[in-house]
Length: 203
Image (tube, rainbow, N blue to C red):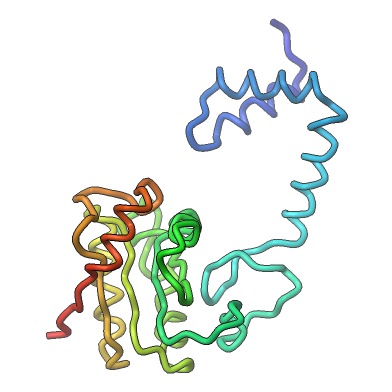
């Protein structure tokens, strides 16, 4: 099959998405081409809108409207006021916890883990987490990082960074399997992990 350069580029781009390879990307591209008006036009507009209007907050890490200016007080998007923050590695973890309706409170998305390839602790939103805790009088920080070596290393570093705040720091406990990633857990496992979270000693 001879593809135009535009199709080749599109296949390569789509194949970079999680869980997709070249074969799956080709099937998706063919589906798009065969449904130009139904899929391509609205998809193109939606992608442009997201690119222009949605960005990741530089303070709390969640997705927000680009028009909203970041500051430590505005990083409380929920209408209700809470006294706790759930710290996760990435946005997909936040979405998984939100969809389970297990947790009610603020989120803080670090943007990865310390040991991730090309990821240093300076790249993560840890300093802004400490500032949010101080400014918003947060009583509990829940570390909901994955039970991987990288996730646990990151949790330990975050815990140490929060020592001076004297805030209660807890970690997800029973129900979270060793090596498990938050976004892959079912609601029952997440419920157990949150319900049985334990406080971390600061000593």
